[in-house]
Image 1 (cartoon, rainbow, N blue to C red):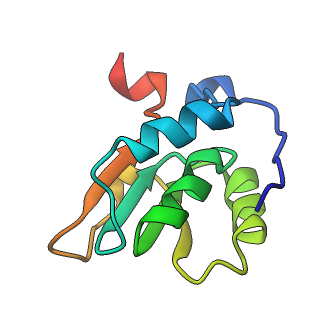
Image 2 (cartoon, rainbow, N blue to C red):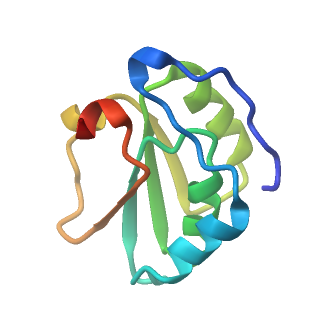
Image 3 (cartoon, rainbow, N blue to C red):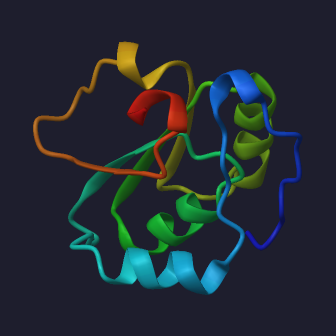
Length: 112
């Protein structure tokens, strides 16, 4: 899962990607995520956070709006039993589980 997905950022999606694996590992390690958790990741981008979440959570559903990234993420995590990649807009996504956690490097266009 160390594969890096390099892709051009799409301005209309306000994409920003983490590059520092140690920083991401520290952020996820300091979260309250455990093997009992179902985690929804909003905008997984290149999957650096997704990989860390997959090591700690019971299940990770990563929802990516960018078709190119979603395809690459499916390939990257194809052998991960606890990772599901969904393509679409999280703001229109219906969460099925009653108990879940959200993790995200939220795109700028949602927070601004």
